[in-house]
Length: 350
Image (cartoon, rainbow, N blue to C red; front, side, top):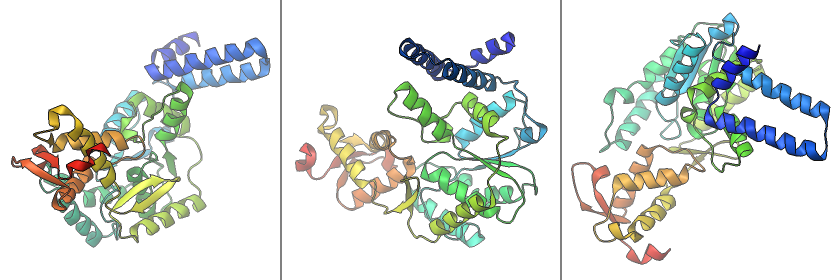
Protein backbone atom coordinates (compact mmCIF):
# COMPACT_ATOMS: atom_id res chain seq x y z
CA UNK A 1 0.00 0.00 0.00
CA UNK A 2 2.92 2.35 0.74
CA UNK A 3 4.16 1.97 -2.85
CA UNK A 4 0.72 2.89 -4.20
CA UNK A 5 0.68 6.00 -1.99
CA UNK A 6 4.11 7.06 -3.27
CA UNK A 7 2.91 6.66 -6.88
CA UNK A 8 -0.24 8.66 -6.15
CA UNK A 9 1.69 11.53 -4.56
CA UNK A 10 4.02 11.56 -7.55
CA UNK A 11 0.99 12.24 -9.78
CA UNK A 12 -0.02 15.43 -7.92
CA UNK A 13 0.28 18.63 -9.89
CA UNK A 14 1.39 21.86 -8.22
CA UNK A 15 -2.10 23.07 -7.30
CA UNK A 16 -3.13 19.69 -5.88
CA UNK A 17 0.06 19.57 -3.80
CA UNK A 18 -0.67 23.04 -2.41
CA UNK A 19 -4.21 21.98 -1.62
CA UNK A 20 -3.06 18.91 0.34
CA UNK A 21 -0.47 20.92 2.29
CA UNK A 22 -2.98 23.65 3.07
CA UNK A 23 -5.40 21.05 4.44
CA UNK A 24 -2.70 19.58 6.65
CA UNK A 25 -1.65 22.96 8.06
CA UNK A 26 -5.26 23.99 8.69
CA UNK A 27 -5.96 20.75 10.54
CA UNK A 28 -2.78 21.11 12.59
CA UNK A 29 -3.77 24.67 13.54
CA UNK A 30 -7.28 23.59 14.56
CA UNK A 31 -5.94 20.64 16.54
CA UNK A 32 -3.88 23.01 18.69
CA UNK A 33 -7.07 24.61 19.97
CA UNK A 34 -9.60 21.78 19.79
CA UNK A 35 -8.37 18.24 19.18
CA UNK A 36 -11.18 16.15 17.66
CA UNK A 37 -9.71 12.74 16.89
CA UNK A 38 -12.78 11.46 15.06
CA UNK A 39 -12.86 14.49 12.77
CA UNK A 40 -9.10 14.22 12.08
CA UNK A 41 -9.50 10.56 11.23
CA UNK A 42 -12.27 11.41 8.77
CA UNK A 43 -10.24 14.20 7.13
CA UNK A 44 -7.16 12.04 6.65
CA UNK A 45 -9.23 9.16 5.33
CA UNK A 46 -10.77 11.45 2.69
CA UNK A 47 -7.34 12.82 1.70
CA UNK A 48 -6.01 9.29 1.44
CA UNK A 49 -8.88 8.20 -0.81
CA UNK A 50 -8.46 11.27 -3.04
CA UNK A 51 -4.77 10.50 -3.40
CA UNK A 52 -5.39 6.93 -4.48
CA UNK A 53 -7.88 8.10 -7.09
CA UNK A 54 -5.09 10.13 -8.72
CA UNK A 55 -3.17 6.96 -9.57
CA UNK A 56 -3.19 6.33 -13.34
CA UNK A 57 -3.35 2.58 -12.76
CA UNK A 58 -6.29 2.76 -10.36
CA UNK A 59 -8.62 0.10 -11.81
CA UNK A 60 -12.11 0.91 -13.00
CA UNK A 61 -14.82 -1.53 -13.97
CA UNK A 62 -14.92 -2.73 -17.56
CA UNK A 63 -18.17 -0.81 -18.08
CA UNK A 64 -16.56 2.45 -16.91
CA UNK A 65 -13.56 1.94 -19.20
CA UNK A 66 -15.96 1.52 -22.12
CA UNK A 67 -17.87 4.78 -21.57
CA UNK A 68 -18.44 7.02 -24.55
CA UNK A 69 -17.41 10.61 -23.81
CA UNK A 70 -18.91 13.79 -25.25
CA UNK A 71 -16.97 17.06 -24.92
CA UNK A 72 -17.16 20.58 -26.31
CA UNK A 73 -14.04 21.90 -28.01
CA UNK A 74 -10.83 20.35 -29.36
CA UNK A 75 -8.75 21.38 -26.33
CA UNK A 76 -10.76 19.35 -23.81
CA UNK A 77 -10.93 16.44 -26.28
CA UNK A 78 -7.12 16.39 -26.48
CA UNK A 79 -6.66 16.57 -22.70
CA UNK A 80 -9.24 13.87 -22.09
CA UNK A 81 -7.67 11.58 -24.69
CA UNK A 82 -4.33 11.82 -22.88
CA UNK A 83 -5.98 11.20 -19.52
CA UNK A 84 -8.01 8.22 -20.66
CA UNK A 85 -4.91 6.69 -22.22
CA UNK A 86 -3.21 6.75 -18.82
CA UNK A 87 -5.91 4.44 -17.39
CA UNK A 88 -6.22 2.27 -20.51
CA UNK A 89 -9.75 3.49 -21.29
CA UNK A 90 -11.14 3.59 -24.83
CA UNK A 91 -9.66 6.85 -26.14
CA UNK A 92 -11.38 6.49 -29.51
CA UNK A 93 -14.77 6.75 -27.80
CA UNK A 94 -14.69 10.55 -27.60
CA UNK A 95 -17.20 12.61 -29.55
CA UNK A 96 -16.65 16.36 -29.93
CA UNK A 97 -18.87 19.32 -30.74
CA UNK A 98 -16.43 22.01 -31.84
CA UNK A 99 -18.80 24.89 -32.56
CA UNK A 100 -19.29 27.36 -29.70
CA UNK A 101 -22.98 27.10 -28.82
CA UNK A 102 -22.91 30.22 -26.66
CA UNK A 103 -23.21 32.22 -29.88
CA UNK A 104 -25.31 31.87 -32.99
CA UNK A 105 -28.85 30.62 -33.63
CA UNK A 106 -29.94 27.34 -32.01
CA UNK A 107 -33.39 26.96 -33.54
CA UNK A 108 -34.06 23.44 -34.92
CA UNK A 109 -30.40 22.54 -34.47
CA UNK A 110 -31.40 18.88 -34.25
CA UNK A 111 -32.61 19.14 -37.86
CA UNK A 112 -30.73 19.70 -41.15
CA UNK A 113 -32.35 23.11 -41.86
CA UNK A 114 -31.40 24.39 -38.42
CA UNK A 115 -27.78 23.32 -38.89
CA UNK A 116 -27.61 25.03 -42.31
CA UNK A 117 -29.08 28.24 -40.87
CA UNK A 118 -26.53 28.26 -38.08
CA UNK A 119 -23.64 27.60 -40.46
CA UNK A 120 -24.68 30.53 -42.66
CA UNK A 121 -24.70 32.79 -39.61
CA UNK A 122 -21.27 31.55 -38.49
CA UNK A 123 -19.83 32.30 -41.94
CA UNK A 124 -21.05 35.88 -41.66
CA UNK A 125 -19.56 36.11 -38.16
CA UNK A 126 -16.19 34.82 -39.37
CA UNK A 127 -15.94 37.12 -42.39
CA UNK A 128 -12.43 38.58 -42.31
CA UNK A 129 -11.29 36.20 -39.57
CA UNK A 130 -9.02 33.20 -40.37
CA UNK A 131 -10.87 29.90 -40.11
CA UNK A 132 -10.96 26.39 -41.49
CA UNK A 133 -13.97 26.08 -43.78
CA UNK A 134 -14.30 22.37 -42.92
CA UNK A 135 -14.76 23.26 -39.24
CA UNK A 136 -17.82 25.36 -40.07
CA UNK A 137 -19.48 22.50 -41.92
CA UNK A 138 -18.59 19.80 -39.39
CA UNK A 139 -21.52 20.25 -36.99
CA UNK A 140 -23.94 18.00 -38.88
CA UNK A 141 -21.38 15.17 -38.89
CA UNK A 142 -20.66 15.68 -35.20
CA UNK A 143 -24.35 15.46 -34.28
CA UNK A 144 -24.73 12.35 -36.44
CA UNK A 145 -21.75 10.77 -34.64
CA UNK A 146 -23.48 11.33 -31.30
CA UNK A 147 -26.72 9.81 -32.61
CA UNK A 148 -24.70 6.80 -33.82
CA UNK A 149 -23.47 5.91 -30.30
CA UNK A 150 -24.83 2.40 -29.66
CA UNK A 151 -27.97 1.98 -27.60
CA UNK A 152 -27.63 1.26 -23.86
CA UNK A 153 -23.88 1.92 -23.55
CA UNK A 154 -22.97 4.46 -20.81
CA UNK A 155 -22.17 8.02 -21.87
CA UNK A 156 -20.26 10.69 -19.93
CA UNK A 157 -20.85 14.33 -20.90
CA UNK A 158 -18.25 16.86 -19.74
CA UNK A 159 -19.76 20.30 -19.15
CA UNK A 160 -18.40 23.13 -17.01
CA UNK A 161 -20.34 26.19 -15.87
CA UNK A 162 -20.33 28.26 -19.06
CA UNK A 163 -22.92 28.89 -21.73
CA UNK A 164 -21.13 26.88 -24.45
CA UNK A 165 -20.80 23.61 -22.55
CA UNK A 166 -24.14 23.86 -20.76
CA UNK A 167 -25.92 24.51 -24.07
CA UNK A 168 -24.06 21.49 -25.41
CA UNK A 169 -25.16 19.37 -22.47
CA UNK A 170 -28.79 20.34 -23.06
CA UNK A 171 -28.51 19.64 -26.80
CA UNK A 172 -26.89 16.21 -26.38
CA UNK A 173 -29.44 15.05 -23.80
CA UNK A 174 -32.20 16.26 -26.15
CA UNK A 175 -30.65 14.37 -29.08
CA UNK A 176 -30.58 11.20 -26.96
CA UNK A 177 -34.14 11.55 -25.70
CA UNK A 178 -35.95 8.24 -25.59
CA UNK A 179 -32.67 6.31 -25.65
CA UNK A 180 -31.74 3.80 -22.96
CA UNK A 181 -28.12 4.98 -22.61
CA UNK A 182 -27.16 5.78 -18.99
CA UNK A 183 -25.93 9.41 -19.07
CA UNK A 184 -23.38 10.69 -16.56
CA UNK A 185 -22.38 14.37 -16.27
CA UNK A 186 -19.04 15.60 -14.95
CA UNK A 187 -18.58 19.33 -14.29
CA UNK A 188 -14.84 20.14 -13.93
CA UNK A 189 -15.49 23.77 -13.03
CA UNK A 190 -17.26 22.79 -9.79
CA UNK A 191 -14.10 21.01 -8.64
CA UNK A 192 -11.92 23.86 -9.95
CA UNK A 193 -13.96 26.41 -8.01
CA UNK A 194 -13.70 24.38 -4.82
CA UNK A 195 -9.96 24.00 -5.29
CA UNK A 196 -9.49 27.74 -5.98
CA UNK A 197 -11.48 28.69 -2.88
CA UNK A 198 -9.45 26.33 -0.72
CA UNK A 199 -6.21 27.80 -2.07
CA UNK A 200 -7.44 31.39 -1.72
CA UNK A 201 -7.28 32.03 -5.46
CA UNK A 202 -9.64 34.62 -6.93
CA UNK A 203 -10.10 33.08 -10.38
CA UNK A 204 -10.82 29.56 -11.48
CA UNK A 205 -11.20 27.85 -14.82
CA UNK A 206 -14.70 28.19 -16.28
CA UNK A 207 -14.01 25.96 -19.29
CA UNK A 208 -13.20 22.25 -19.23
CA UNK A 209 -10.49 22.70 -21.86
CA UNK A 210 -8.39 24.63 -19.33
CA UNK A 211 -8.27 21.67 -16.94
CA UNK A 212 -5.14 19.46 -17.13
CA UNK A 213 -5.52 15.87 -18.27
CA UNK A 214 -4.60 14.46 -14.85
CA UNK A 215 -7.44 16.41 -13.26
CA UNK A 216 -9.94 15.17 -15.86
CA UNK A 217 -8.97 11.55 -15.36
CA UNK A 218 -9.11 11.95 -11.58
CA UNK A 219 -12.64 13.34 -11.87
CA UNK A 220 -13.63 10.49 -14.16
CA UNK A 221 -12.34 7.88 -11.72
CA UNK A 222 -14.11 9.67 -8.90
CA UNK A 223 -17.52 10.03 -10.56
CA UNK A 224 -17.72 7.48 -13.41
CA UNK A 225 -19.46 4.88 -11.28
CA UNK A 226 -21.93 7.29 -9.68
CA UNK A 227 -25.62 6.87 -10.62
CA UNK A 228 -26.52 8.31 -14.05
CA UNK A 229 -29.09 11.04 -14.62
CA UNK A 230 -32.55 9.92 -13.66
CA UNK A 231 -35.61 10.37 -15.87
CA UNK A 232 -36.63 13.65 -14.23
CA UNK A 233 -33.13 15.15 -14.58
CA UNK A 234 -33.01 14.18 -18.24
CA UNK A 235 -36.42 15.72 -18.86
CA UNK A 236 -35.31 18.98 -17.20
CA UNK A 237 -32.29 19.20 -19.53
CA UNK A 238 -34.46 18.39 -22.57
CA UNK A 239 -36.86 21.18 -21.55
CA UNK A 240 -33.93 23.54 -21.06
CA UNK A 241 -32.79 22.88 -24.63
CA UNK A 242 -36.28 23.60 -25.96
CA UNK A 243 -36.32 26.90 -24.03
CA UNK A 244 -32.98 27.95 -25.50
CA UNK A 245 -33.67 26.80 -29.05
CA UNK A 246 -37.02 28.60 -29.09
CA UNK A 247 -35.26 31.90 -28.28
CA UNK A 248 -34.01 33.97 -31.23
CA UNK A 249 -31.01 35.43 -29.35
CA UNK A 250 -27.57 34.90 -30.89
CA UNK A 251 -25.65 35.29 -27.63
CA UNK A 252 -25.97 33.44 -24.35
CA UNK A 253 -24.19 33.79 -21.00
CA UNK A 254 -24.00 31.72 -17.80
CA UNK A 255 -25.75 33.56 -14.95
CA UNK A 256 -27.56 32.51 -11.78
CA UNK A 257 -26.85 28.84 -12.40
CA UNK A 258 -28.33 28.60 -15.89
CA UNK A 259 -27.85 29.71 -19.50
CA UNK A 260 -29.42 33.11 -20.17
CA UNK A 261 -30.03 34.59 -23.64
CA UNK A 262 -28.81 38.21 -23.89
CA UNK A 263 -28.62 40.85 -26.62
CA UNK A 264 -25.77 40.73 -29.11
CA UNK A 265 -24.54 44.05 -27.67
CA UNK A 266 -23.95 42.51 -24.22
CA UNK A 267 -20.13 42.77 -24.37
CA UNK A 268 -19.98 46.12 -26.21
CA UNK A 269 -19.39 48.13 -23.02
CA UNK A 270 -16.50 45.81 -22.13
CA UNK A 271 -15.03 46.25 -25.61
CA UNK A 272 -15.23 50.05 -25.45
CA UNK A 273 -13.85 50.13 -21.89
CA UNK A 274 -10.83 48.09 -22.99
CA UNK A 275 -10.43 50.29 -26.08
CA UNK A 276 -10.34 53.40 -23.87
CA UNK A 277 -7.74 51.78 -21.63
CA UNK A 278 -5.53 50.96 -24.62
CA UNK A 279 -6.00 54.45 -26.11
CA UNK A 280 -4.74 56.02 -22.86
CA UNK A 281 -1.44 54.14 -23.16
CA UNK A 282 1.31 56.29 -24.68
CA UNK A 283 2.36 53.70 -27.26
CA UNK A 284 -1.17 53.67 -28.75
CA UNK A 285 -2.23 57.29 -28.20
CA UNK A 286 -1.37 58.53 -31.70
CA UNK A 287 -1.34 55.61 -34.14
CA UNK A 288 -4.03 53.51 -32.50
CA UNK A 289 -4.01 49.91 -31.30
CA UNK A 290 -4.25 46.57 -33.05
CA UNK A 291 -7.67 44.99 -33.32
CA UNK A 292 -6.05 41.71 -32.29
CA UNK A 293 -4.69 43.35 -29.13
CA UNK A 294 -8.14 44.68 -28.27
CA UNK A 295 -9.67 41.21 -28.67
CA UNK A 296 -7.09 39.82 -26.24
CA UNK A 297 -7.73 42.58 -23.70
CA UNK A 298 -11.49 42.00 -23.77
CA UNK A 299 -11.27 38.24 -23.39
CA UNK A 300 -8.78 38.64 -20.53
CA UNK A 301 -11.15 40.98 -18.71
CA UNK A 302 -14.46 39.18 -19.17
CA UNK A 303 -12.95 35.72 -18.63
CA UNK A 304 -13.24 36.31 -14.90
CA UNK A 305 -17.02 36.30 -15.18
CA UNK A 306 -17.92 34.73 -18.55
CA UNK A 307 -16.60 32.41 -21.23
CA UNK A 308 -16.61 34.20 -24.58
CA UNK A 309 -14.85 33.27 -27.81
CA UNK A 310 -12.55 35.58 -29.78
CA UNK A 311 -14.65 35.35 -32.94
CA UNK A 312 -17.71 36.87 -31.27
CA UNK A 313 -15.67 39.78 -29.85
CA UNK A 314 -14.18 40.31 -33.32
CA UNK A 315 -17.69 40.40 -34.80
CA UNK A 316 -18.81 43.02 -32.28
CA UNK A 317 -15.70 45.14 -32.93
CA UNK A 318 -16.66 45.17 -36.62
CA UNK A 319 -20.17 46.29 -35.61
CA UNK A 320 -18.74 49.09 -33.42
CA UNK A 321 -16.55 50.27 -36.31
CA UNK A 322 -19.62 50.30 -38.58
CA UNK A 323 -21.51 52.24 -35.90
CA UNK A 324 -18.82 54.95 -35.81
CA UNK A 325 -17.50 54.17 -32.33
CA UNK A 326 -14.03 53.37 -33.71
CA UNK A 327 -12.17 54.05 -36.95
CA UNK A 328 -9.65 51.99 -38.90
CA UNK A 329 -6.46 54.04 -39.37
CA UNK A 330 -4.22 51.40 -40.94
CA UNK A 331 -5.79 48.84 -43.16
CA UNK A 332 -4.12 45.52 -44.04
CA UNK A 333 -6.25 42.84 -45.69
CA UNK A 334 -7.87 41.60 -42.49
CA UNK A 335 -9.59 43.78 -39.89
CA UNK A 336 -8.08 41.80 -37.04
CA UNK A 337 -4.61 43.11 -38.03
CA UNK A 338 -5.78 46.69 -38.54
CA UNK A 339 -5.02 49.65 -36.30
CA UNK A 340 -8.03 51.21 -34.59
CA UNK A 341 -8.67 54.51 -32.83
CA UNK A 342 -11.60 55.64 -30.73
CA UNK A 343 -13.66 58.33 -32.43
CA UNK A 344 -14.76 60.12 -29.25
CA UNK A 345 -11.50 61.08 -27.58
CA UNK A 346 -13.37 62.86 -24.77
CA UNK A 347 -14.32 59.40 -23.43
CA UNK A 348 -10.74 58.53 -22.50
CA UNK A 349 -11.15 59.69 -18.90
CA UNK A 350 -14.19 57.46 -18.30
